[in-house]
Image 1: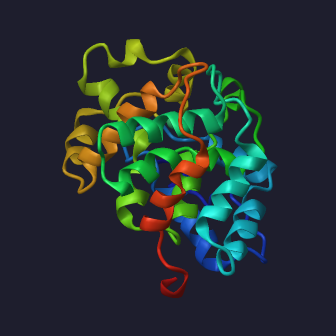
Image 2: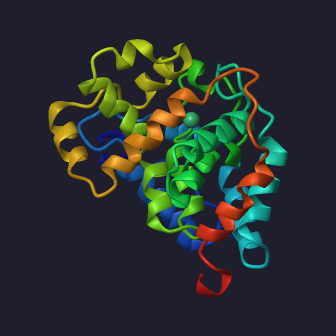
Length: 250
Ligand SMILES: [Fe+2]
């Protein structure tokens, strides 16, 4: 990472933003990309021009006195109807389809929740749906991970945090994977650093959550079917409540 590590990043945090959350996002921004890839310039624009962290602050305060499933309901109610990038599904439809695929495979509860929430970072800012077309990477995997960190265990957090890196990995190692990506996903790939280098792939494969991250990526890629019927968001409440960190443990 050159741009974000060689100089003070241009991310600014409101003094009212909880330090833990602000530092979490800041460190994610420094650490994203896995090293060696192209710099993720979009972060500066995304954080500077929007009130992303105000949303995170709002959600963080809610976490102290409300159940996590209610927060998720509110996020999807507010922004879930927005289009999923340039795809033919909304953010809510995409999350529900991913969760449904995980459930149909009989995946552990943690994976079902990770699939449902893998793009929740897109709901935490007000960037337009076509931001990637304008050269803006919203770093949604890191925003989402920062939000998830205080609410779910690592088995949910890490696959979400790594789902973009999984795409970069699969583009590098799996013949035909890149070509099969949707056009919006190929556009965002360039902003996300492009296919991993050989060294990045070797490092990524050694990660504790490598297998689960790749598994999540497969569901993500398939969850773009226009008009597909899925269970509603309320169906996944039992999974969320089974996996979420209890309020008294936060
Ligand atoms: Fe996705």
